[in-house]
Image (cartoon, rainbow, N blue to C red; front, side, top):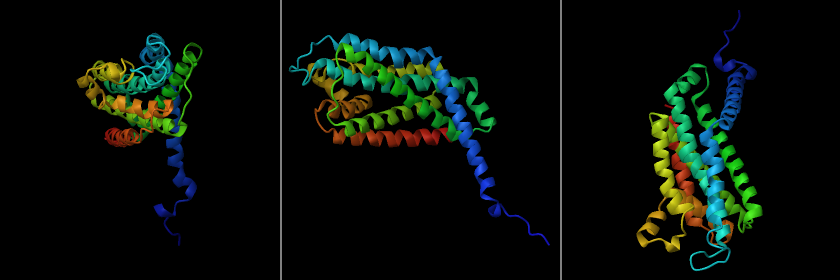
Length: 265
């Protein structure tokens, strides 16, 4: 008399088949998203071109000698700062617009109906955004090298942790915004409103020493400015930025948890 085969008696190969299908689907999604990334004028403008052009303009505006406003070579100050601009442009402009346009056109519903696990889309966006940050950051440094020089990284481990934590925090924030905002136009408007004050006050604008006390206090609490300090201070040897890094890591954990919960709805 044969014994019925129970679900927990299934062979390991059969149990692993869905996991393999999910991994394959996620790889295909990542590949497709990378191709789309190269065709997106918003990405090419704000993530690849804008940081490089503005770094070239402002990086040479204050000379090369440290002074009361700049504790290090001003050009190196802005080269290090504009790496954070790449992170902010990716998380606040590129991702929200991209994901909101998907929601607007019903792409996310079609992905779910096609059998893609809900988490695969968020994972694909994380991978694509980190690739965009890496490529745009490398381009920024490649352009800066013959013009202003690339400053030595004084504390590479801490600077790398700042880059990683800041990238994850703003990529997750971008995914969250993209899933909350109703349209690509709304995402673009909100993203620009969030990006440019942070850019001007906390990263790529005038140094804190020449700001009014009110603006300086405001810039101290901007998330992008905190990410910038977590990267710039150990990069240029201005400090350990331990407390700031802890805040950015906390921000990364919170935004990642919220984005994961939102994409799982």
